[in-house]
Length: 168
Image (cartoon, rainbow, N blue to C red; front, side, top):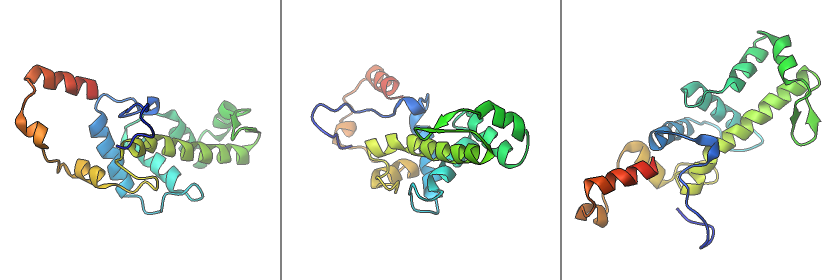
């Protein structure tokens, strides 16, 4: 991981993706990124498709995707519209009709797709274009090798447990 400057703090996650099993869940996200067919771009559906993968994977308990799916499949369309009516999105736009609600759903899913991958970019598991790095590949494949310090086995079991606790 490369920090932006000497005063930067290293985080393994952020508040948008709080996890008990962070690394296991990152593997699920990395798998979703490998299945992405489109290049990561705000101008196409790649970010929305990725968010839908995360929602379907069970990593998040998000009613937003369910509302979107019900809306586009004409289930409870009016009640879903009423739920989001007058919601602000994209700075100054307001949901006022079905078309604007659909635009809101699409933009929000893209934003959430970016949000769920930002932490992976920050720690170096994927690059800015959301291509998996060598480190991300090794985490995904489970092919991590012990470095010289780990081979020395200088940490006692309690210390290892505490480190795992802090990192999980």
